[in-house]
Amino acid sequence: MRLRPDITSKLFCWSLVSLALLTPARGQTGPRSSIEVVLAEAEARFAQWERERLEAQWWEERQFFERARKFVELWNTFVEKYNRGEVDLQLALKVSEAFRALERSRRWPAKPQKTRRAKSEASVCEP
Image (cartoon, rainbow, N blue to C red; front, side, top):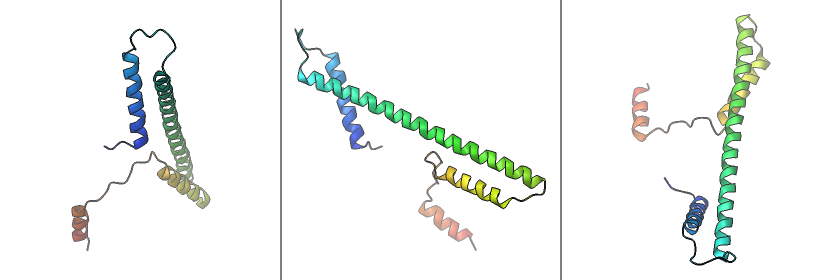
């Protein structure tokens, strides 16, 4: 797994802050040194970044479940009408659009990658 440079630098800053907090300077009773101030600011920025990342992840999940709920609601309506012998093409288009919106969301599972061997076996089996 490869870390992105911005994450790596933030983790490095966080480790420096942790190290600075664990090893206080000897005999220092006056104002904090500039490095301590910088490290404390870096830790605060990292904590803020982490909160924002978790909030964004929560919103993505909420949006995905909202899209799934909408699709299921439209699908149930379509099935009820179909079982009564009605075919509503506008409703079918709405169901299709809702499913496509669900597929485009970031939480939708990725398609499995076919290997060369699987592709060659698939071509052999097909007429």
